[in-house]
Every structure is written in structure tokens, then in C-alpha cells.
Image 1 (cartoon, rainbow, N blue to C red):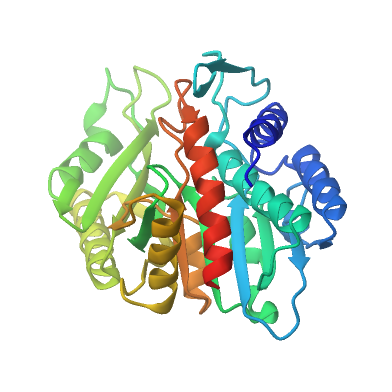
Image 2: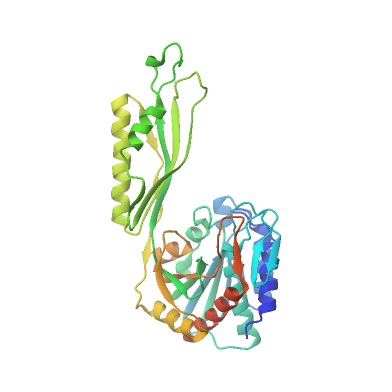
Length: 368
């Protein structure tokens, strides 16, 4: 029942639409039109306005009064560079021409959801009440999901299509994550005439960095300083340094302990040298863990089997809208849709995987 040519054409149309985070308007308008043509009740919330974007979350509802309510979701925004995407088909692979990302993250997920809806409508298939959310600004902090009032829809469970890997893989565990700036403020002085009158922020920061935990802390926890900026001139003792820091852990208690240890070390080191310390690090989202034998997991495993793919429950080191919705009390799985080398100009997706994902979603509908 899945029509491959239609699925591919829809995907190609969407990846050609530029939709960087906070600038998803054209993509949102495209999806509003498609969902209305399919007979869904369609609305747009205020997430764009709340977050400084030009488009809110796009919500579509396919009514089925008295039946379970099931969420299907993927995000509209893509990472840069995405101003002009030229997709190329080579055999059974769709990739970019090498000048941009492809945008399979997450338009591959959107394409499979739309194909599922088209098959349901044209074959008049029995279905639960379906709530579709195409979220904005996922890539820069899950902003659309955080702003979405999911509670008012009374959803029983949800399937988020936003993971790399082959169809059949479901992410049942993902980390809590924190990020922000670590700022060391020293004291400027002429580096050639009176360096002893200054406090070199880099020297202070380096001592602290030598004491904190970075990299792979354990199998559940990571820590990283990703960018560093500082200094005004080569002949001035560096007065300030700013470092972008992030940490993640599948265990929220471990993450909070790591953050406290890191901040304590910076504060102690700065005090020792007479420098000042400031940080903006905070937890952006909490992790989630879904029982592999829960109702939603069993629905997915049976659906995957019916669609002819092997199901696998896995954990992930990355966050997604799935974290937010689970945190708001809706049990959700993050499903792999086949996208590969995401966030790079080498990104690609297999046509066979998009077809398989659409078939899995249709089987999920049957199992619900």
C-alpha cells in the first residue's frame, strides 16, 4: 500500500525547502497544506512567537472518537548549511550534492508520517485518533517540544521519528543534558612591561581544566568543553576566557553530581588566583527510560515484526523531543528512520529505509 514514488517525491520536495531553526515558515506552510488536504484538523501553536521564530509547531489531528490517542512526531528544522539543498539520487540512495546537509534529519521522519496518513486515508483504514506534531527549533534545544502543550491532548503514547539507524531500532533510554558557559575573569596588564600586575584568565582556566573530568566519564556519562574564546591582544595579559561546556548522563543523579564537582573546582581555582568565576550551565532537559516490556514497546516490536524488520531496543547518547514528551508524562519511543551521517554534507538516506519506516508506522496503527 505504500507508494514508493510518491514517498520519494514528497521527501525531495521537502528537503528543497530551506528550514533552519527558527526559520521554518515555508516548511510549516507546506505541511499545513498537506495535512489539510488529507482531511486532518490542523492548527499552529505559539511556539514560534515564544522562541523568536517565524513558525510555531504544526499540529494535525485525525479524529477517531473513543479510541486510543497516538502521537507521531518529527521536527521541521535542519542544521546549517541548508539554505539551498540539491538532493541527488544514486541507485537506492538519496544524498546531497555535497554543498549542504540533506535534511533527512528530520524530513525523512516527516515523509514517512505523511505517507502513513495518505495510505490510511486512501484505503479507509481503521485507526486510533492520531495526533501529528511537526515541531520547530528541535536542533537548538528542543524548543518546540518544550513549548508544546501536549498535556491537553490526553495522548496515550507517542512515536517520535528522529533517530539514525535502520528502521526497527527504537530508542528507549536517552540522557539528561546540561550546557552553558564557564567564564573566568582575570585582570589585564601589559604583557611586556608589568605582567605580574595581571591575572591571566587562561592560566587559571587551564589549571581548573586539568582537574575536572572530561570525555567519557563512564558508560553513562560524558563531559566536554567544545569552544573557547578569550583575549584582546597579544601584548595584554588575557583578562577573560569563556568556554562552552556540556555534560550528559543516562543517570540524572550522576549528571548533577558531575556539574557540582566541575563548578566547585572552577570556583576554588579562581579564588586561589584572585580571579572571578561565572557560569551559565544548566540542565536543558531530563533523560528518559521506557521499560522494554511496556505496552508501547510491545506494540512497536509486534509492528516491526509484521513489517518484516528486526526490532531492537537501544539507548542513545543524544537528546530529542522524546525526552520532553516523556518528561511531560507521555510514554514515547524515538524511532530510527534510516538517516545516516546527519549534520554533515555527506548525509544520506536509503529509499528502502523510508519505505520500511512507512510500513512500520502502518503496522503500529494496526496494533493500536
